Amino acid sequence: MTQDELKQAVARAARDYVADHIPAGAIIGVGTGSTANFFIDELAAIKSRLEGAVASSEATRQRLEKYGIPVFDLNDVSEMPVYVDGADEINDKLEMIKGGGGALTREKIVAAVATTFVCVCDQSKLVRTLGKFPLPVEVIPMARSQVARALTKLGGQPRLRQGFVTDNGNVIIDVHGLSIGNAVALETELNQIAGVVCNGLFARQGADVLLLAAAEGVKTLT
Ligand code: 5RP
Image (cartoon, rainbow, N blue to C red; front, side, top):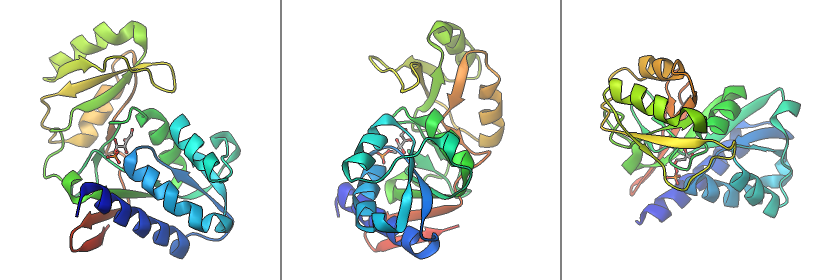
């Protein structure tokens, strides 16, 4: 199976998860990226069961609206049973690196409101140790040099993502060369650097359920 076929398979499994576990009339959170896009395509088939969705990016908002799925402002939503999103890497504790698509800040905010984070991945994303995928860090533009120096002191090799501005008007620094032993500690430490808006470690609040697509089928890990 190609990687896109695996992503489609896991998107269908996530649609079934929503149909089976989420009460009718719920508002759900929807992530960003190519796997999330396949999920939105599948979600269209069960949209009548939902009141709507909260989008984690402008791209996701546009795709949901294209299917006629109502998109809610997060400030108007106090309960969300599920948030469905992909990841760039995930380990067996269901800690993740996210932000390859640059939407990490809104993703973390929407996920924080949801009761259950369902991560949808193909098997290439499951790793023993996080950090081979460069860790995205969203940074206020005036702070990029100071944040880059702080990231170097932590042992990483920071690289500014060229020509990219987040939905929040900030820049992304991708940190290469990290081997992340304690993801919770690093997530917390990165949040203390002045000028960092958010980092792509989702460890303090990781995924609750992993739907993992392999050639043999989609496995559910919790
Ligand atoms: C976007 C993300 C995505 O979930 C992550 O990059 C995975 O993307 P894809 O499903 O395209 O592999 O965090 O900010």
